[in-house]
Length: 253
Image 1 (cartoon, rainbow, N blue to C red):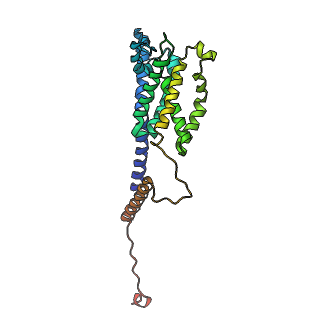
Image 2: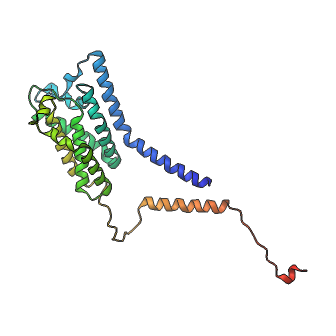
């Protein structure tokens, strides 16, 4: 029983560690989003002037600062959950390349705004980055045959499918709310492009269940080894009972 409890504790610890690793850096960014917003509001720092200014040399700095700047509480809140969800999925499925993907979407979307955005405007907010990450995950899910990533793509379509209307400037609500449709558009395009660029990285096609595999996956081998070790531990801890047998004629003597 001690061995079984140890095995369960190790499994739970591994699961918790995995979750923490996935959401750690996305959570750090979200904290900085909120801190920047409240400091800007409390001390009237006018930081929103440091957003992306298309075509202006001074506006290049906004490519880096744009995701941390938000116009009001609604703007900030509407970006927080989608950012946390999409970034966590990227850090989960694409561990070795997650930072390259994340920073690539961030910089390319901002550069697209600076090059082709409407002049005399300032673009702020993390929504361009959100559109890029969601587009990356959706595209990655649909161009691969990996069931887990495809499931994530369908979840994102269900949760954020309506985001597609934010790509088009002709809708009245986009104009009335001064939404940066350019940020959404270039974010989505950068996400799609990077998804094809890294199509050989991360989760790949699931194996055909009808084809014989050459070898078992490592996680299965580890699990079987732990089960064997647990059975051996139980065997060693169990007392051995020896039975002495005597023929009846000897037992009567």
